[in-house]
Image 1 (cartoon, rainbow, N blue to C red):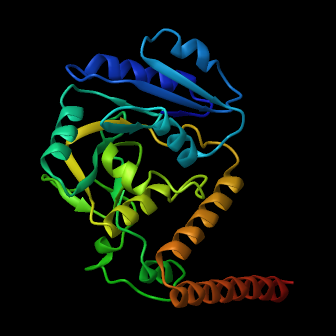
Image 2: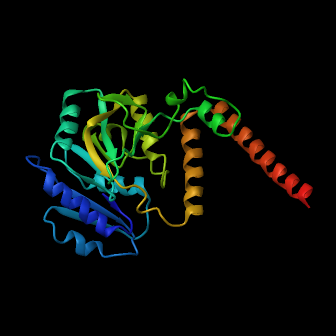
Image 3: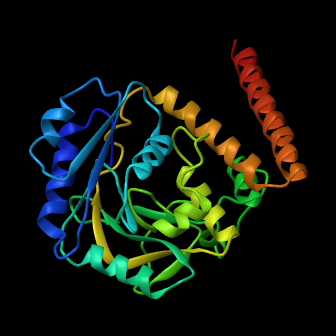
Length: 278
C-alpha cells in the first residue's frame, strides 16, 4: 500500500484487511512517499503485522510499489490503494482461488465500486493508435466499435473476463510472474503504469482477468487532488512513454508528427479567432 498524504485512508484500508481477510496468512507493507500531511507512523503502530517503509522523496506510484514488493514474501501480492478498502470476506479468497486454478493468468482484479454503491473504473482496453487519432479528431470510431477501444471501463460482465489491463487500485498478482517479468516499469511516475503492466504480461502469455463477483470500494483520486496542471503534465508524459514502448518506431513517430501538427493548428486557430475578434 502506497501512502501520500492520506494517513486516515491508510488506516481505513488496513482495518478492512484485518476485518475481512480470514484464514489467510498475510503481511501488510506500507510505503510512504515522503508525505507532508498526517503521521503515518502513528497509524501503523497500532497494527502488529504492518511494515512501514519511509521514502525520503516521492518515488511515484510504480516505484514505491516495486520497493514494497522487494520487502514482501507472500506467494500472492495484493496491491491496494490507500483510498480503497475491502467490504466482504469473500472477494480476496475468490481472487486467489482464480489465480491458483489458472496457470496462464498473471493478474486478477475486482469490480470496483464507489462508497455510494455505484460502479467505478475497474479496467480498460490497451491504448491503440486508432484511439489516439480519434481523441484528436483525425479518426472516427463507430458507436458499434467504441467499446472495443475504451481505455477506462466499469465492470460490465457477470462472468470472469480477460481484459487489456486492470486498474491497479486493488489487484492480486502471482509472485512467480512478478519475479519473472517484473512489477511496474519505474520510468512511469504516475498514470499508465497499470496499462503497461497488462500489455507486458500479455506479451509474454499471461492474462489479466476481471472478476465481477469480487468487489472492492475505491474512492479514487484522494492523493491527487492538488496541482492539476502538474498532474496533466504527468498524464501526457506517461502516455507518450507508454506509446513509445508499445508501438513500433514508425507508428510512434507518425503519432508525434500528427500530434504536433494538431497542436499547431489549434494554436493558429485560437490566434486567428482573437485577431478577427479584435
